[in-house]
Structures are given as structure tokens and as C-alpha cells.
Length: 258
Ligand code: PGA
Image 1 (cartoon, rainbow, N blue to C red):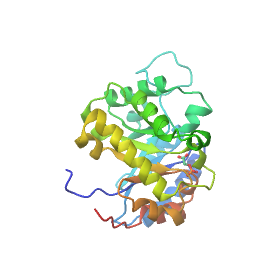
Image 2: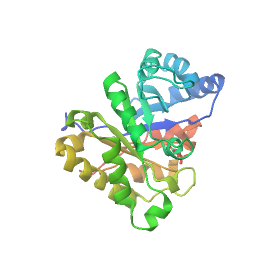
Image 3: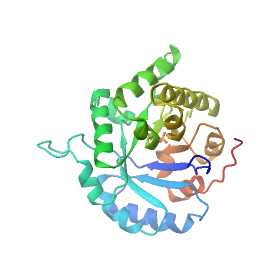
Image 4: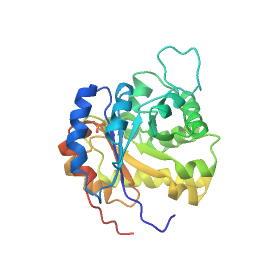
């Protein structure tokens, strides 16, 4: 499994944008523009769009997923959505712990941890987001903040879970700010994340985990980011909303020097 070079994962996060009609228009433009040699394509769309997007992307390489879910299998949790409900309508993955969930909706590491466990129990691919604030970076605390998030959010997981995991490093100061982290910073942080995974779950699992970068990724900076050895893909907000820009990133051919 390890000997075959993996394609990059290009994941779009639409946040609270697009109606079903807008999503349909987007996909009808995007789909014919995806080349056979494209990277892996994931789109995290609003709940209301999942079913339509799944139908429209049937027989394409695009995987549709959600941006959040609850940790319980079902229950009296008004307004929440369970993993099995997402799976039923064809969602293949779910973003967990996005910084907007952590900071606007006060989601704690303890809650995110329970969601990660649920994702593995119910068999939906989690994309766990972690990232530091600007003042934490300035104070030299980036490594410590990320380690604390990882160890809290991934507690009790087994090496075979880490093996399947997708992590997105999204420094909060870079999200929607037009100030993407430099490829050098991201590479260094991703190496650090892999070291933490290696310490707790072993090298094999750490190497198989996919680590994406997110935060002001655009057509102009995507390819230099993807060339870094420890950047396995990108999680893209703003630039995933227009099919013309998103397809350019999706089709980027990256030659990594291993
Ligand atoms: P951005 O968002 O690309 O618009 O910075 C990234 C994200 O929040 O996942």
C-alpha cells in the first residue's frame, strides 16, 4: 500500500454557501473539467445539498461529505445530525473540529473526540481539523497547542484508525484571511504532526495518515504547497466555491521528490 505514491486530496469546504440550484450549476461546470489524472476530489457541502450532490457526482471521482455531525448514534438532540443519517444519503466523509465549530460554536476537544470515535464506529471517514491562533504562534506555542489538540481529539484510537485518518492543519490566522501560511511553515508543522502520531501510534500509522493544509489556499499558492513532502492535500474554503478555480487546483500535477 505504501509503495504506490498517493494522489493528493483536494477537499472543498463550502461552509454555509450554496442552494441546491447553485450547487447543481457548480457541479455541471466542474464535472466535465475534471481530468482523468486529477487528484482525489472531496466536497464538504451543506446538509441540504448532500443527496443532490451525491446523485450528480455518481460515476465521477468526486466524493461528497458533510461539515459536521453529532457524536451520538441518535437521540433527543434538536438540530443535530447523526453519522448514520449522513451515510444513508451517500456522504462518504465528515469534517470534524473545524475552527469555526470550535470558536463560533464553542465545540471542545472532548466533544470533538467523541465525534471522532463515532466516525470510526459508524464507518464514515473523518477529516479532523486542528490549528493554532495567531497569538499562540507568536508566543511560540504552536507545537504544544497542536499536540494537545491531537492527543485529546485522537485519544483511545488504535494504530489502524490513525492509518485511515485525514487530518487538516488549518492555522486559524490563515483561514479566510488571504494570508496563507508559507509552504515552509506548513511543511514544518506537518512534520511535527507526523512525529506526534509516530510517538503515540507508530511510524506505519503516522506515514499512512493523510495531512492536508487549509487556510487561504488559492490557485497561485496550491502547487508549491502540494510539493512539500508532508503535505498530502489541501482543504479549501473560498477557492472551492467557483468551479473554474477549484478545477484548476484539482487538476494540478505534482511531482514530488521523495
Ligand atoms: P479558506 O477556508 O480557504 O477560505 O481560507 C479554509 C477552511 O476554512 O477550511
